Image (tube, rainbow over all chains, first blue to last red; front, side):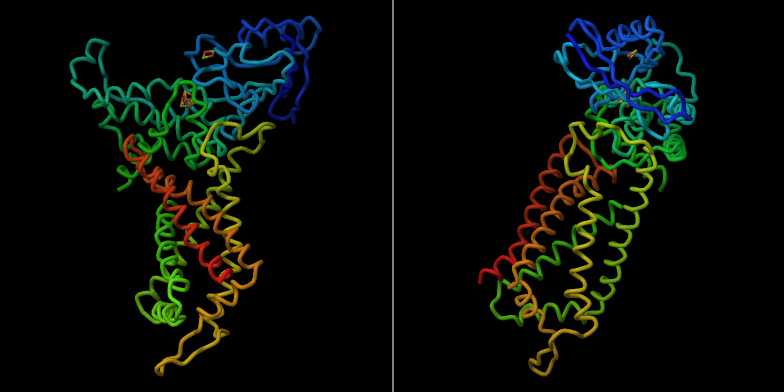
Length: 245
Length: 207
Ligand code: SF4
Ligand code: FES
């Protein structure tokens, strides 16, 4: 298939950046989106041009490193996948594909499609952990946990920290990510002890890092590759009120 | 934000109930008495201050949050807002702007006239009443007025249909079983409020 690409190119934070148009021919519909970009980059290198910079690592949809904003959707038009799991068969021959980086004040630009998501690491350092030693895997079964809570916690733990929720949100809010961390840890007995401190610290840090405020629009849930549910945001609010009063 | 919103949501129902008296009863004095009671009762006087406070809080918080949200994404997307989401929540600030303009005009029209004594008075059984009912009827005989009010109610409906259920989520109330109930309630409430308010100018205009 033949494609027109409109890709955001930006040398660094200081530069203004702009869209550059590229044309690609004979792309297999079976290739993945990132493979398509690899082909483009090979062509750019042979033409002695700068390749397009983007993040990726596992290319198996599990690490959360990849991420770009394709035709108005984080991770592209398909649902419940990361961009490394997106395939070109989702597009039509002759399509124009607009590719932008995640845009948020808390995710400063590095280059082209790569942004600095260390704000999420800062959040994890602030409250995405438990201070007790939980032992090794078999020890987990020594503490009986209600199935309902175990499931809710596991669902929230599926978050891979890709940042699509922030990218999708019209307010660039990190509530889904933080909500997932709070649910993941505070529903379990090992995490309950620090629940109050955790939620207060996370919310304060989230505001400090310059993320926006939640308006319950639900773009995060619609675009999250791991299907993290918005009920986690309500739980975050609930935990916050519990900690505050 | 959400608490002030829920407070305003309840007030809308009360206000609507009293207004409907204008079209339910042929005698304009029923509404005038109700309005008179509302403006002379001390409890209601206090409530009035609380109400303005609630409205002001709602507006101020909205502005602060909105400005923060704009700052959170200094550079816009070329293609934005394509996600499959709650439609009206994308336009809360816009519908809010329209409602605010409406409220200002509405206050100039009715509330301030009564407060600052520009309305006609009538004498019944030795008590002076503002003849608001007749004024309302006079106003809504004018077509542009009717259209403007109904348009504002429709935008209010857009604002409410998201605001109602969003307020619950912000308060931490989101539940597999009950959230659909809240959403259904939000829909019914919105339809009732928009229809209830809109029917007043319509009935008066066509009578
Ligand atoms: S909540 Fe979903 S979209 Fe947000 S970081 Fe986690 S996996 Fe990515
Ligand atoms: S590269 Fe690891 S999730 Fe896409």
